[in-house]
Image (cartoon, rainbow, N blue to C red; front, side):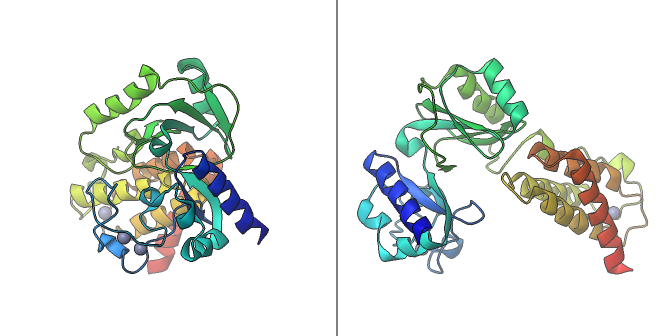
Length: 292
Ligand SMILES: [Zn+2]
Ligand SMILES: [Zn+2]
Ligand SMILES: [Zn+2]
């Protein structure tokens, strides 16, 4: 009960200050869409990339549901969500800001060297650096760093400290560079998701290159999506799933290279190297055990 009051009262005070907010569920991700909005059957919200007409009274469509409307925020359906919520999030561009989300100490150290100082907020393992001004969002613009502004949400973790400064060219450049190197790619993209697995090491694999690479890239994206918790078990699941695909191959299939990439992805979102490698080894063993 107190948690509901706290989330809702935080949300209402942010909304009063012009910051559009939404609830996140326990895993710190938005609530799933309701059945009318499932798979975007409703066409999506008017503010989405492809504008739709959805006026769903529930907090569907992730960041696009963020609102400053206190009547919506305190409606019965939203209160039901606040009751199950694990955090309050906001839509940075809707508040006129850009959040550079630095996931770990290395990323924070990089920002201190490379970016102008601004308002900062401590996160679980890193910091949010908040600049005035909006831009396109992009995940994984550097190891451990995301840019969250338009069409994105960021966790609200308090007002932070320091004076907010204008969005610097250095931050704009992070996303421009990404845009030029990987045009048209909308999903979480990074050097890690560009597979290093190579056909030449997989002389005994009976799958096509595309099949192996697509599976690997999806698996890595899945691990990279676990920014707060669960990346270690995601790495285990991905390792197990991918290894299972090759239990019918005569081999070798280049599973070592695949395993390294899985571990690197987990390490990049904060899993210890030791734990990441063990998760991969256990996942591979799990796959073999499953078919034995
Ligand atoms: Zn809905
Ligand atoms: Zn909808
Ligand atoms: Zn294979």
